[in-house]
Image (cartoon, rainbow, N blue to C red):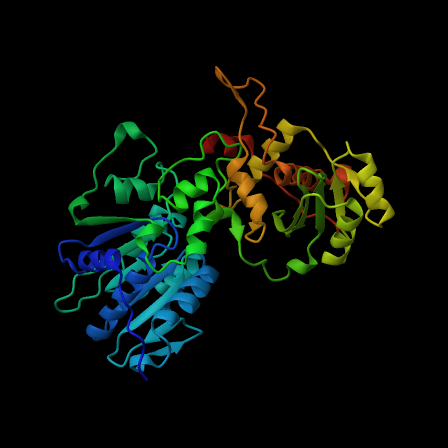
Length: 442
């Protein structure tokens, strides 16, 4: 069985030469989305497995489910289909095994027991995809297993990512070549700085990228466009929720058993401005998972009510903007009873912030399904109003790009106050992050 040869474009050819250079043992390929950086790394690693008998190569992401979907199913198998060159894919172990005894293993780093099992082997090369999701401590632990001896081979650690803020450890290590530190006054150079190589990418580097995909990236809102199109390391400066991170807070699938969790809906009314309804569920540890949105302009409330009822059946605790009593009455006439949402802006914003910040178990208390595209976009656009002297003393957000943000605030306040709003089922005890957690973030 023959495969179509993977054709490298010019930027990928430059990357290939860099990977082949024995002077470098640590790599950062950073930049915009769909730029071709991950594919060239995978092609190079496949070449290494085919030409170095007995080599063991680890390809990893933070979350196991993301590693299985993106690296195992959508990337590795696309580049090297099963059966090509005698390669055999072992699904349960997520291993590609080659006739010469080499092996490429795909894994997740989000579970200590799983990490210990993965790191029971020694590896010739290790590639961590979307490395901004992984802590520096985890990377240094993984690097201890970069120790397989193969004649004539140079062991390599390869990291790739879309950028985050410039204070991120990966920017410090891979771009500045300094040891990660929160104290900028005590920055120390990396002991192995000379071993590091970096290549920056943008989608414009990829001549095979469809025009409509490029237009989609060009149309992203401010901070997302700078990161995903231009590949800039930049902060969410001025946003109400600067701690929001899609890699941390967004999920592609709801956890098993979520269909039995208590359910909530929250509604912010609008006609010329968007109407927004959010669906959420609360797990046994009190985490809120917002898993669906309805975001419509210029649609009558009667039609919206029918859409809401048809979207999902079951018992919901529904809160809605109390200032539009006519719309609430229309929903009630359609069979959707609502309670008045708590509209206190400052208190609601702080409640959302506390859920976004990691709590004591190193996990946030708010997750967003990646299908909620309008809400995710608003996270990056929802900003504090400013006057000539800077931020307003009362810290009011700009009344723009806030319809999903308002609905989210209503839901969080309802979930956090079961004594006022009740719940769809007996609520789990919830201990949100503390003000101390929030202070640590800022």
